[in-house]
Image (cartoon, rainbow, N blue to C red):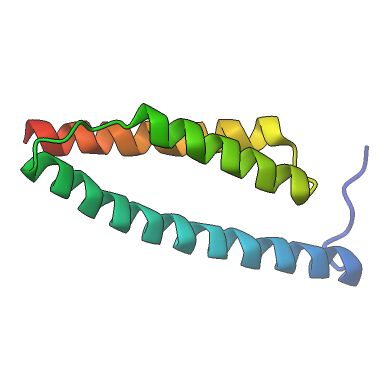
Length: 98
């Protein structure tokens, strides 16, 4: 298997688009985590549990549906969301225990 030359303008265009999307994903995730950090602090101050299984279940169902509508594998989208939710819960537990 040979690598396509980096001088290939079509491949370079695709890669530039991917790089832009990756940058946007990082910025969106950073903003999401800023908001969930505020949620974790609020929950800690108000003695609310770090996790909300009902909300998680609703979010996963909602985002699986969006994934299907967008022709994205819903299993992948659920794994991705579960990874994010688990990390947020970990942060909320840390805020609670601080």
